[in-house]
Length: 171
Image (cartoon, rainbow, N blue to C red):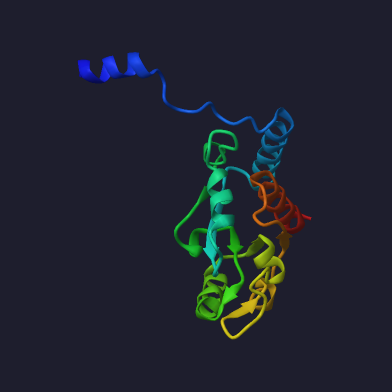
């Protein structure tokens, strides 16, 4: 243990400072989270479906759980089963192999079946388009409430899309 303490004393703290996302983005994320919870009550359960993406959008979705956005701390959580979800977050162009799985996931989701397509590939097929391997954008396979363009979109844009979908169904 003394060896580790000595090394820490010699090297110092070897981690980077946390990046600054700006007070405006942080304030908007807090406002969006508060409005989501006021509309839905206690919690929002999200099932994320990767329909064939490059995982760039998943990295931004994962950022929603970091201390800046902290959606888990406010009752917005990701669930493993569509049967427990209020909303589907779909990324990527729908590959031919994922077409049936995405339809079954949508069918298994209880009402109101909110769907948010995240990223350029989910919104318009992106660089993959429609081909022998992909069906193209998500709304060709299942109904979509909101599209969040970007390659990849920023986490605050994803939060805006989720809020927009929830608002549509409440009205």
